[in-house]
Image (cartoon, rainbow, N blue to C red; front, side, top):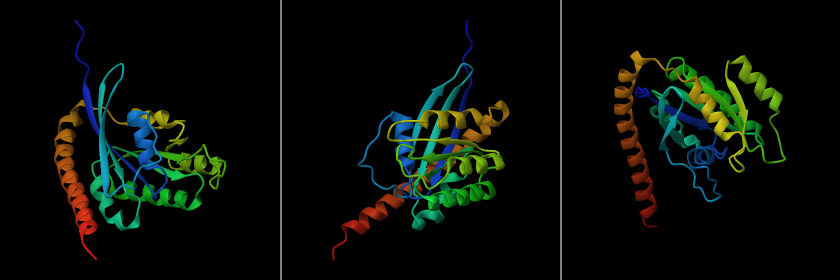
Length: 209
C-alpha cells in the first residue's frame, strides 16, 4: 500500500512595477492563458494552485500585487509571511528593472527570513530591449537568485520560472503546521483588506459629479 504524500502549503507573492505583466504572468501560469484586456490590479488579487511532485503535494496561494505607487504602502500586508517571491520587470523598461531591485531589497529587509526570490524579465517577445540579459543575470547571481526571461504572451519561460521558485521552497515537516495556521490567519486579513479596497474603489466610482 502506498503512503499518502505529504502536503505543503506556501504563500508566494509577485512584485514589480505597474504594467510589467505580473497579472499576465500569473494567468499564464495558473490557466495557461493570455489576455490583452486585463485591468490593472487594485491592491492585490490571489489564486490557489496545487502542484503534485514525485514526493509531495504543493498547495500554493499566489498573491498578485498592484504596482502603482499609491498602493505601495499596502504591499507589506501581502508579502508578509510569503516564503517565495517572484520579482518581475519589463525588459523594454530600464526603470522597471531599477524598481525590481528596490522590491528585492525591501522584501529581503521586511519580508520573511530566508525568503526565496526569483527575478523575471518579462516581454521577451518584444524586439525592444533596454535591460541587457547579461546585466540582469549578473545582478541575480550577485544576490543568490535565479533569473528567467519570460513572455506571458507566448508562454516562454513562465512555467519554468514559477516551478523553479516552488523547488526552492523549504519542505520541513516541523514548520508546516505552524506556518499553515499563521498563513491561514494572514490570508483572512489579506482578503478582508482586499475586499475593503475594492469596495472603496467602487464607492468612489459610483459617486456623482
